Every structure is written in C-alpha cells, then in structure tokens.
Length: 244
Image (cartoon, rainbow, N blue to C red; front, side):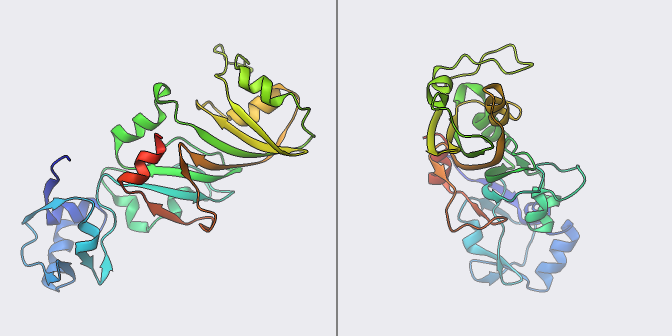
C-alpha cells in the first residue's frame, strides 16, 4: 500500500474549500476543527491524508469531506449538464457548494448529455480520470435504451459484429453487446466512448432513442435506491469494480 501523503492542516482544508488559511486558523481557535476527538491547536501541523481521515476529523460537528484523491458516483438527473461553465443546471450544483473551490478541481469522468440520466463518475484525481477514459482501458458502460420504433431483431448481431461507421467518423465502431428487454427497449453495453454514441448508433440503423439511462460502468452498478441527484464516495473496492 502507498504511504499516505502528509499535508499542513490549514493548506489541506483550504484546498478542500473550507475557506482561506486564515479562515481555517480562526476555525481552529474557536475549537471548530476536531481531530481524533480533540480540538486542533496548531493548523500548521502536518497530518497524513488518507481515506480514513473523514472518520477522524470533524468540522462544526460534521464529518470531513472526502480528501483529495476522491472519486464519487452520482445519479445524474435529466436536465442537468456535465459542465462547469454552461448555462442552466449543472451536475456540480448537486454537490456541496464549497466543492467548487476545491484544488485540484473536480471533473466529470466523461459526460452524459443533458437528456441522459444515470451513473456518472466525478473525481479530482487526474491520472485515475485518464485511466478510466483511456481507449485502451475499454471500460464497459451499460445503458438502458427506450426507442421510438420496435426492434427488428437484428440489433444484437449488427452491434455485436462491430464495424458500423457512424456519420462523420472514419474509424468503425468496436463490437457492442445488445440485450432486448421489450418490443422497443434494451440494454446496450459499449467498450468505447464517442460523442452521443448510443443515439447515433440507433440512428444509423433507422431508429430513434427516446430515453437513455446509464446504469453500470465496469462492474459498478447504480444502486436502485439511490435517487436522482444523490451520490456516494467510492472506496478502493468500488474503484476496482470500474475496471472489473
């Protein structure tokens, strides 16, 4: 196991969006920062920043946010955009407001368009983000698709063979798995990520996606009891499921 990084308490909390270093100092003076059951006296002290820290540190009697190196899984609702800057409702509005001030910044791992719901990963860990989205990783992503027209029965073979070329793309698609569920719905599993890929795939075979929901990334599934807008922080086991 990698040795935990150490960091000054004031710098750590400032980077996590709790305020400036001077703000953190004032909070400690007011005994609002508790570590291992005792108020912190010296915010210049260095502490190990590991996954156990939120269980050990409390601010204003609330458990510390996940420290740097976090990855969270969010149930993205319809109507919100995976962006920091676009107009309208953003996925980052669903997180605690101070998270907008975190350094390093939290980014979406890939995107779900405004009209797609489901499992979305967000992280401040750049190397992990790139590992997940790297083409060579071929992390599987499964979608529930509801269509405008009935299935023909040929979709499983067509998508499974690969080789389909989408309009505007030079490289053909990798094989994908399709499992029919009803007359006009099914589960589609991709091993690559292209712009509006699911919608474009069905358009290429003469159908139209009316509703799209991602329920799985790798072996990590969206819990059925996690309502839209809710999220949870992944531990090492959860991260491993992404690549399973």
